Length: 379
Image (cartoon, rainbow, N blue to C red; front, side, top):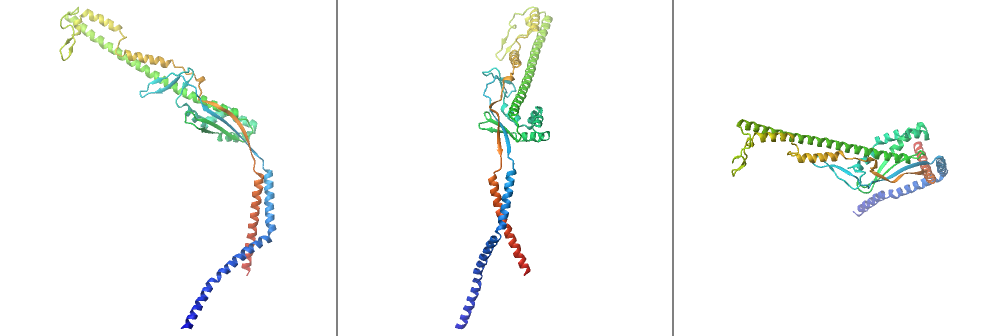
């Protein structure tokens, strides 16, 4: 039994040694491979140096051949106007125009004028209309070449941008700018475009106000005519009533006013009973009829007609002086800056040397791997 146990333990120990033995061999193999790689890199160091030198020379030539690019930027800063106005046009729930006078007599307040100005400023259609009409393409063709003018025109418009600086919608500052690469002075063009947009915006807003005033004038005239017709109808009906009473008085032989208990109003307790009109007599009724035919100043619609006529006069007297009106003011008119954008030659050369060095190492490793594969296949 002891011999059997000894044999089993020796076999077991041998099996454990078999499992442990490969580990140090693996370490040796890895150490040997790394050493071999380093030796290969050292042996082919001139190849690595050659690739690095070629990359460095190429980067130096590239850096020397590159010409700096000059960028021109034009921008302007705008602020909302702070001036007061003469009239403010707004509408209440009944659709009537209210006119509010303020301290100055040369301008008007326009609701949403600033918002409309911002929208018009960024509209590409407005930009195309203005710059084409003002001959920007022809100007660019003279400054550069006819072939490049269209591309330069598109570059200027595509880079035209608008930014809003601080505040709320009523006091936001506006920055408008564009960038291009052609050596021209664009400040006057940008200032003119801003003035064009402001003029266009004011014209559109004033046209809307004039239209609203004219519509209100038409509406007021219709109401006056309607009230006048109602008043005429009132007097016609009253005249017919008196003519009927006069005919009855004539038929009954009542020429003069009847003086009796029934010729005045009687209060019966539950209501007042008016005496018949023909009690006034034929003569009196005919006099009243002639008087009613000429009467028109104290009808039931007299007060309303008077107020409407006063409103019509006020609406017709509104004068809009657009030449003194402004939506925006220049805080900084358009000014132009120049930026020279050139590549960093030192950085380009350093990156190229690093790339060449790493490429040389990779090339050496690839060659070593290819040679090892070739040897293995030959064996």
